[in-house]
Amino acid sequence: MLEIKVIRNNDGIITHIETPLSGYDLLSTAKLNKGCAFTQEERETFQLNALLPHQVETLEQQVARMYAQYNEHGTSLSKNIYLNVLHDYNETLFYHLVQQYLEEMLPIIYTPTVGEAVERFSLEHRKTRGLYLSYPERDQIKKIIDRMTPQCVNLAVVTDGEGVLGLGDQGIGGINISSAKLMVYTLCGGLSPHHMLPIQLDVGTNNPHLLADPMYLGWRHERVTGDTYDEFIDMFVSAITKKFPHIYIHWEDFGKENARRILTRYRDKICTINGDMQSTGAVALACILAGVKAQDIPMSEQQIIIFGAGTAGVGIADQVISALQKDGCANPYEQIWLIDKDGLLMEDLPLFPFQKPYAVSKNRVANWDLENPNRIDLFDVIKNVKPSILIGASAKQNAFTEEMIKMMAKNVLRPMIMPLSNPTAKSEATPEDLLKWTEGRAMIATGSPFRDVNFNDHLIRIAQCNNAFAFPGIGLGTIAVKAKYLSDGMLEAATVALSQCAPIHQDKMSPLLPKLSEIHSVSRQVGFAVALQAKREGLARLDKNIELNRAINEVSWDPKYYPYRKI
View 1: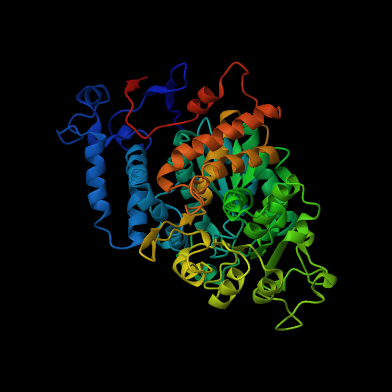
View 2: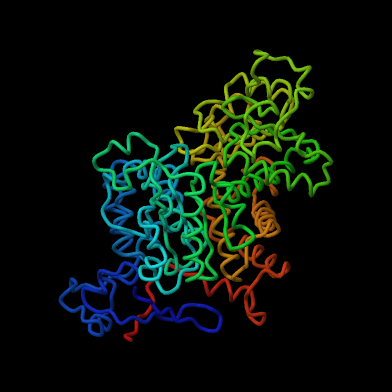
């Protein structure tokens, strides 16, 4: 595959790009295409005369045209498709357009609309993007990676499509998640798209609708499991890290049985992150740390309920446990209550290994007032625990009822309530209801984007606890210093840096997180904190003479047209 030569100065800033392509080959390469913005000199140098209309446009003129075309589409899905087609035609124009309208368009290319795009992947498929590594072709993985990848890849988002958002098993459609995540890395973290790769591990699907769908493009087979599955993952990791020793692998939307096991297996061996567990946990904890100061309740006195004990819910709990331990809490597990489909996690219930540390003994609930003595549900836990923080990671719409929230609000002046499930239709409550039920006292962060709420003639912005506030900056700092692996200390540094950006520090009635329009600068601060911590821990494989700002510049990219030179 073609290597694009990006030339940078001593500060790591891009000066120009070199390419051997010309004519139709150049116009059909999305990473290089400028469309009608090619200058007259470039048109002559790269044999583009007569292949383009006469008028030479600026990037801003192109953006205006694309935005007008975008607004002609009436549904979120059709807008998602339009933007993805633009991405496949002209990446620079795509990123410049979306960055200019980030708050409007991020929910279109990312959550929640990407969920619908995943469900309709086989029907809407237009152009192949990334790598599809199928289990039947497992013996060829090394050969495929050697031959079919760019010369330099420093970031791969990998999925097997088993646990997509709140939608469950979506098989090969998970590739849309990988692609969307990489777009967010560039839009929010400024990472160069020239060295990224979305990867779908096609190990089958257990979704009967997909298996029966004549248009389904994936391997029509039940998912491989157990040792067979693990061996396939090993083959992939071995092949990709052999070719790219410094690669940062982001695992996304794996089933809860596999997600933690994969992370545990590789986190101290390669540079890797699980987005559902670690980046979701980091941004949720950042909200908590910011909100705790507004509550004037120390961490040691917080009682936290997490409704949903899957990959995301337990990932958040793990991050909170680390924060409680650092705060000197003697028994941090006694401050967190996890509830799954069978109710409160109890020692006598069948639990996954990663859930067991949070299991509650019968002695601790012996004196509780319960609606049903055979099952402890969310209502019971709120009634007996009197939480100060309530987090939703259940994908159950409207699970937080008016009675529950009012009961919680009786015991804490500023309850922190975070319905984090995606997409929007899966949210445990709406911000409008939460503000109404708490008389405007609730501090709210949601997983999906919600409009500002007019409450008592005041327009209240709702913080979106979007992991886009965390993983792009974490990746930026980690990749910049070529870290050996992502440590707990680096994650903690990211969380603290993000928490410090919260506007609630300046005004206790402000949101728990910055605006999405500020996310690029936030990611830069997070990235610097992560890179600095990696150096402190001796995990950076960066030349000691290179300053961190330069290192970050060298993996960054701005969506603008750079001068081209012919090789």
